[in-house]
Image (cartoon, rainbow, N blue to C red; front, side, top):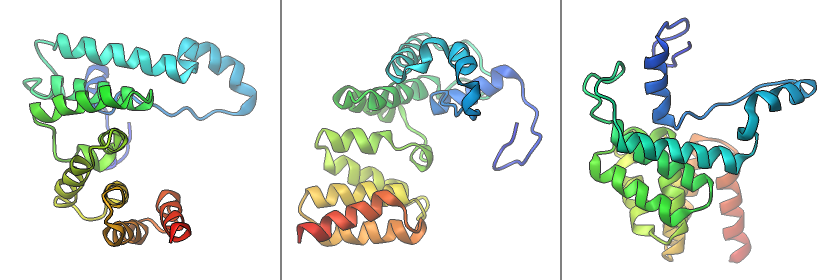
Length: 200
């Protein structure tokens, strides 16, 4: 496999791969030529439907939260197993648009001790907390995440949206501008600024 930290040609076993992959809710991207669609759809089966896929992933995450393994390869004592399970449940619920349930799942993951890097790469908590009006939580999470590294455009974007919802237009504009400094022409921030301009 290729690892962005350790480079190409990193050899790991299937169990370790799955344990590491589940941290990202086992998301995958399929690259295929259009003429391969029929064969691909057969391979994917019911997962070809997004809602069905996320429901199945949700069931898996919930089951794994209830029954952690006795031992792990990637994590010596499986300490984060249940935490990652709740986070993955939240991710699937976010993708299904069930934001109140997702927020509750993310709350559980945070109570168990979410790793500080989780929101470097996954942004479901921002989306679901924002969607249910928990703007203070969006801002607090973004602040905590940006305290660990400052180049995360998604954290600026979601904090900007939360600030705007709380009436802090200046803070929101600054966050959207900063997001674009780190990711030039990034469409979510471009659109957010354009919407602010049209509302003025």
